[in-house]
Length: 397
Length: 79
Ligand SMILES: Cc1cc2nc3c(=O)[nH]c(=O)nc-3n(C[C@H](O)[C@H](O)[C@H](O)COP(=O)(O)OP(=O)(O)OC[C@H]3O[C@@H](n4cnc5c(N)ncnc54)[C@H](O)[C@@H]3O)c2cc1C
Image 1 (cartoon, each protein chain N blue to C red):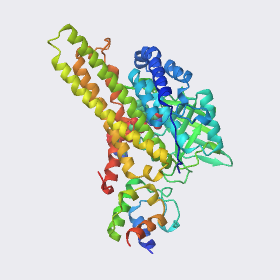
Image 2 (cartoon, rainbow over the protein chains, first blue to last red):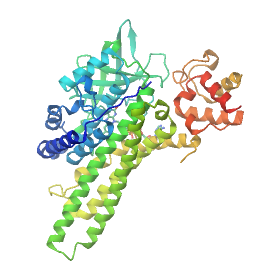
Image 3 (cartoon, each protein chain N blue to C red):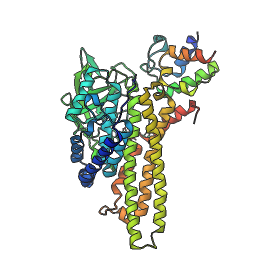
Image 4 (cartoon, rainbow over the protein chains, first blue to last red):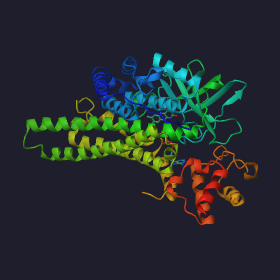
């Protein structure tokens, strides 16, 4: 059960200084590598190293454990800024933070996990996630594999078809059934540290977009100490931390990608207006139009983040496990993932062939390819199906 | 007092992986395989059976975590 956790956040000045620093890393390290990361489908090592250097991997960890203790609103802003420079780097960062959020909200009462978070701060450890499973696909709330406990040790094997940056992560968080005779939905969450697990490569990641997330497939073989198993059921971790923080942080970096597309459209319109003051009227109207949609996307996010932060501050576990909140957080993901495709597509219409080219400063190729991945990161139709179910009984709109 | 009826409804709509007679009033229904989809079927059946409306603020995991928490909810609403 969640406890009130007032992530106090940085004060205004400290946070603006941090934002400046993130932009600086974006401009000088992340953006220059983005095209290569994308074309080679390689891990964005220089970007993640720079974020480690700035201690940003522990941005959400409470200050008493050495972290920066950003609140969720501030963390979302960091993801949004990263998204403006490279979708893959931002996605790696956001996925890691979702797992940190699970740790922060669900394990602070436990000595082992507190020590782990301190290590994460000191060593800037990167965590990857294995929820998806061969035979189950994208249904987060079911597992086939089970943790096998004997005495104070466990073994756990999982066929995971997609683990983003699995090879470059230090640690791994894995979902599984409580035991061999547990039902598919009776799940636990387990932390595997480097040395506890081996990965046998099964699927490669040669995709349309988010190529730098290197989300290859692996068979995981692992063993560890029972203290690495989260004390609470995965269903609670999911509804209170993973589900809201994933949709908020992913959505934020998608806003970053959409913002960059609109920025490209804006500079295209400006340059066209300079060359031909008479001719740019249609594209400037289109720009005004797409700016409205971007604002809608942003405002939708702000309302949901504010709501989640208030719930966290109040430690309101009734509100967080309520259907109304789950529906809102699902709608946020559905809406952001679809608006991103729309906004990037309309920016392409404005930039025209310059946006369509791979070798132009207005190129939107990467943005477009990345944007189609958002609807699949937990398939939108699956999410819509959950909302359809909940809306049969939930009355208020 | 509604415990028998609630058990009947769970048996019919809960799609649990453990047989309902094997569960105690306090057993965790999610561990017994209750999914969110099945929760909704159970809810609709409860509303029909007891002629109640479960308000939005009770639509949460906690309400359906055990037979006793469901019975408590029904008792509260079916005054
Ligand atoms: C960039 C990226 C990074 C990712 N990183 C990770 C990672 O690090 N770790 C990880 O574990 N996973 C990761 N994933 C996997 C992701 O979480 C989903 O599991 C996956 O994208 C779902 O793919 P899908 O749409 O093919 O599968 P499914 O969700 O299985 O959907 C397949 C089809 O079934 C339909 N469907 C809808 N509802 C249902 C239902 N109730 N039951 C059955 N079918 C239904 C869908 O509409 C769809 O047509 C990543 C995915 C992406 C795109």
